[in-house]
Length: 178
Image (cartoon, rainbow, N blue to C red; front, side, top):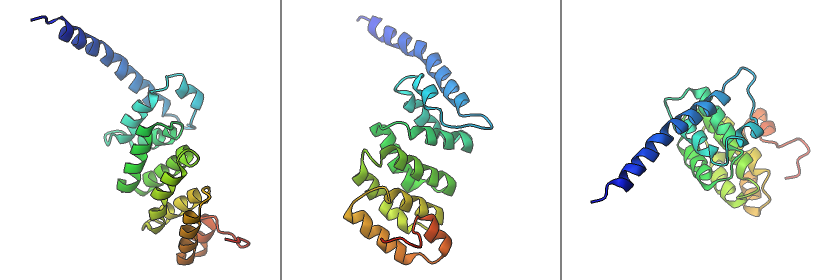
C-alpha cells in the first residue's frame, strides 16, 4: 500500500492552513477602522476568491456585528453564485433588523442588474415585512427594476403605506406618477 499521496495531501492541507488563517486575519483587519469604507481595489489585491473569506466572516456568529456587517457590505462587490445564495438565504432568515437591511442593500447593489428577476422575486415578499426599514429598502431596490410584476408590487405596497415617512423613504414623492 502506497501512503505517499495521502501524506502529500495532508502536508499540502497543513501547509495551506496558516495561509488561510493569515488571509482571514488580513481581511478581518481590512474591515476595521473608525472611518471605514468599502475599498474595492484593496480587496481586489487579495485575489478573486476573497469573497470566500468575506462569506466566512459574514456567516460567523462569533464575529462582532460590525465585522459581519462590513463583510456583507464588501460582498456587494462580488457577483458569484455563492454570494447570491448567501444573500438569498440570509435575507429570509436574518432576525437582526439592521443586518437584514444591510443584506437587502448589498444584494440589490450586487445583483439588481445581473439578476433582476431573482432580485425581484426576493424583494417583493419583503414589501410585507414587519420591519419598516426592510420594506423601505426593498422598495427602493425594486424601483431599479423595470417589469410589470415589480410595478404592480410597488403599487400594492404604496397603497398599504400608512405614514408619510415611509412613503417618502420608499421613494414615492408628491409628484410621483406611479
